[in-house]
Image (cartoon, rainbow over all chains, first blue to last red):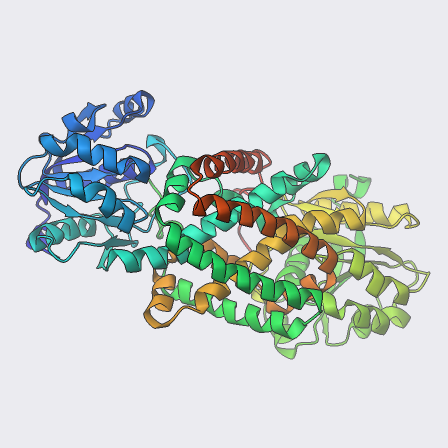
Length: 310
Length: 310
């Protein structure tokens, strides 16, 4: 991508990762493994998470307060739940180095830009981002240095953003194995509402519906979960706070897709009630083609071949 | 389970498998690998599937017509889509050996009993069954001899069924590694509506909703599918005919669960619209517990450790 990425020289000197959970610890592991930065500073408001990050030796320095962590950083990566972005941006703003780049891994872009950008000084560049990667697990232990290999990493810079900053962030994540793409924040939020937010909402709902069954039935729902329900429990095991914030921050796009989904579900419900097998079979045949598309795009496995290690 | 299962002697002499797709070929592979029968006969109305089964040497003899395949069978296992069960039972009935046992792997039990049982002669025992195992793939190549290891296999015999026949079918699938459980057909259909049928319906719907997006958005839904949508496309890649038949044959239970699901989804939709984060977080925290239950029940992986081989 850039000369730095080709030669293997570090792309930034010092990286500060704010929030050292699944994604934050994956960022810390990846930039070190691929030599993308010289120094990693970790911040987390949770004492437990920070202590665990120390035990795992994920960074070179550790701070509870984002304001302290960012003082020497050339690039700051926000990896907390979305709801905290505004407050963190405000707290760290006076301490950011002039010329630093701020980016994030948040699953919603429009609301994140609205919450964080107004607090950031003119002397730094904000390049919002989102890796389409992750697992349902939480905490510093859940991360992986190869989480981003072969995965898309979307950047949504605004029109006036410094192109050099965008190029360096692109080089950073490319070095970590990601396929970096640029798009408008609004478009990102619409596509992700379908590919990620709605699936999570549906999974949470169906697992909730199953929980509400009584006694023996509830137990058997878990024992006999291998028939499809299992996959939904995995998705519905994701971080409650992270996902609460996603739905609250991408409300319009999620509600729009949910409306379409409900209409389509009612269509199938009616077909089942009236025994219209042809309508069911026709849809099921079309959806099967989509699976082939996902496999062809090599996005069908949680990790690329041989890439599941820490 | 029985003396035969302990000593390793075959439990039946000759097994006929009707329908040699994913499940049928897995049955053929498993009973051979674990020495559960002496001889396997395969039948499939599809010439291609039968030819492929021959190439894979899955059985000792091959027939297109079920009526020919069952003539020497001590146990017959129906592995076709549910919609064919009535016609197959009728066609094979006059050719069944007196004393033979008939079982199946159908995902719905009440409707299957109603469709098949009336055609079967009094001289045979019908022990309906359903392994909670399988993948989204179809055809003789998709099967695995270890598909049933560590998986539940539910039997739903009626009150008057010969207990010796039930014990032998239990021994057969126990030998193949399954955890055999007995329950009422109606109860099975209710639990599976939640754990399997509803999840599939939802997955088909959401993939259908995504298909209906326009142009570039549709492409990007596939490219960025790793955020959750991927898992739904896998489920929605299952056999269209098999699943059409499941929904048509478990209509009442599926519609009942779908109604509950829709109410729960509307509750979340309203919480998102009004920004009620506490309601979202409360549910998401409860559903996370369910995931822990699935992992504790060792039903969280498609195959048990080391058991994914053919």
